[in-house]
Image 1 (cartoon, rainbow over the protein chains, first blue to last red):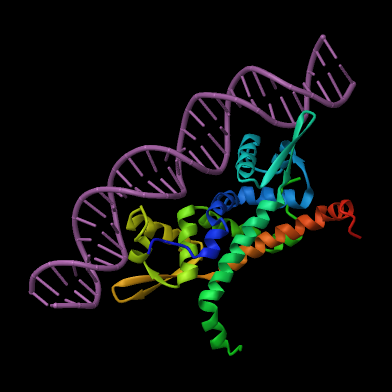
Image 2 (image 1 turned 30 degrees about the vertical axis):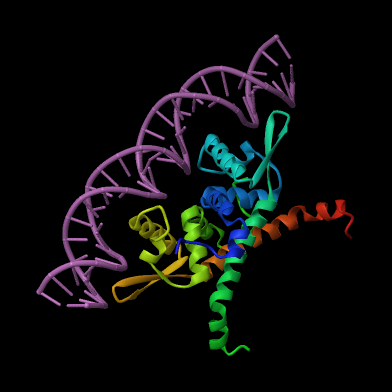
Length: 118
Length: 118
DNA sequence: CAGATAGGCAACCATAGGGTTGCATTTGAG
DNA sequence: CTCAAATGCAACCCTATGGTTGCCTATCTG
């Protein structure tokens, strides 16, 4: 056994999902994402305001999110607006969905049998 | 603006999702999860075999996954079997779903208008 | 019992990651 | 033109993290 993953998971380009999850695996970044997704494009200063961390820290976080393809920047005059890139979120969600499906396929039958569902 | 997230996202206990994403944000751990989800419970030795890393490294990864609630261990004689805990996967998936919904709510109208959908 | 198999514990190492401070640069507003 | 706002760049700090090696413990199996 070589941690060989079953075909459906492999074909899904599962390994590519790790950087996205890693980017989402920080509370500050998760807040940034949540904020951006509900409020549209914001500048760095706007995103920093109300936080207890520095503007540079926020910039770094945005950079991480950008490298993961979760966010995109748009220059607007002297400010730089950041907005969400929902495709990657969707990709990540689908990856989790695939895992769940695989799980159901491998063990769900037993579960269904126990629960008495035909 | 204080990175104040909108009510639906807050009520979802969004911050709790960060550790789960962080745990999934490593390729090795992602493989472990994928493998466990498709093959059921495995011992540490089984999970290590076929990997280029050490058994102790695998143990550490499993510990991280366990701390995030993604996996659970069951003692069986002299070996320790690890199995997936799909609830957290489901939680994480729902978090992403929420973000997407929020995004659609905030900007989807514009999108739909552009695409000519009534 | 003896040996091999499965795992636990702990120290140690190197690098990445989250944050900060300090200063330079671009650009909108008077 | 001048100044303040919005960023960019870079060095630096500390801790977390992925990984290793070495050794000890538990437990099947013959």
